[in-house]
Length: 249
Image 1 (cartoon, one colour):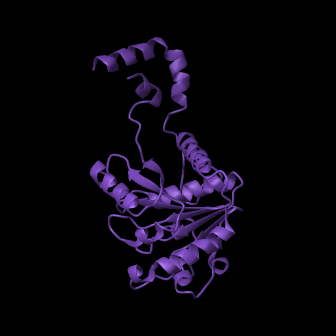
Image 2 (cartoon, rainbow, N blue to C red):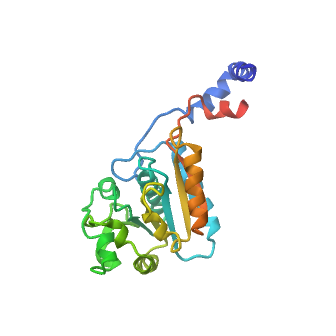
Image 3 (cartoon, one colour):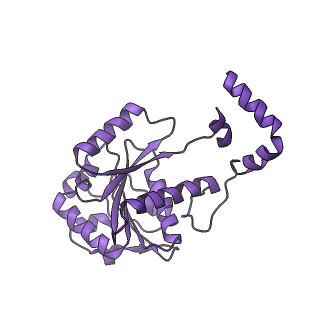
């Protein structure tokens, strides 16, 4: 309590400077021209996605193409929103990006980009189509999306290591970044099939809702599968006081 009081008093003494800083962190949400449909993002959050881009690029400095799986522990942690927004940020910086909705249980990318769901991952895995036939254009020149496709009766049996390996190899020939939206790891085993085929995984954790034990269990499953955990995203974090004040506590 004493530290909080001292920080507030110091902020009051420096109120002219602090108000300028505070303006950068006010929760004003503005639509950016590169955002997917139905998504909005603040300047502060945009900076976080830029930081994620630079961190991931530094991990694969020589790679011509990278395949990354974005996965959460349970449904509702926002993996689809994260992968869609990150893909748009990459595309607007001039990189060729392919988003893949591999969550055959509860797909979402077709809704975020307002494209037809059919003709997608299901058809690729069945060998009925190839990647070029199912890629769907978005309003961003360098961003394409492959939707989940026709809902399979048994997604688990459709996802085999051989089929997934062939699919990802095709995708990497098409884009610099292949970003895969996978089904939640603690609810289904679908994402485990991708572990040996991707270059790394990004763990999505929902702020104030995902228990640390659950996130730790998901991380352990990724470790056991031998996938490289290249990062984690704390999604939907709320700032109850300005960030600059957190730094003073």
